[in-house]
Length: 100
Image (cartoon, rainbow, N blue to C red; front, side, top):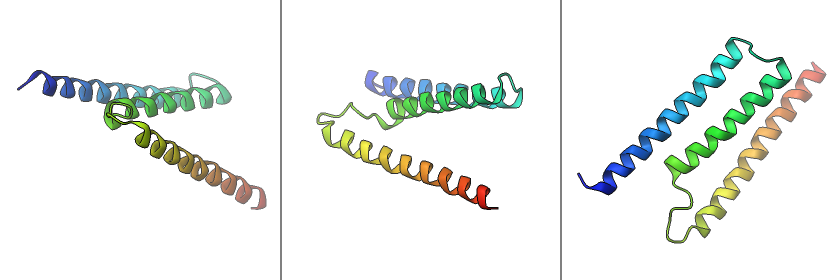
């Protein structure tokens, strides 16, 4: 096994452990009700954004390519689509709750 292969395995291991840690942290913050609801929401959203960054860095390897410009553009469009889906879903659910 060469050195580059070991570095990839260690990067995947670190990414996996960070993802599990962040997920469990968010889970226990919610289950144990450590913070008031608004603070808890902000904490969980922050942990989700950190986990998103971990996924991008350790598993998607965005920015490590020889020509990362196209990958970054594609990634930006993906973030835009996900934001539209999330905001649209929240908007629809709030509207349904209001009219129900």
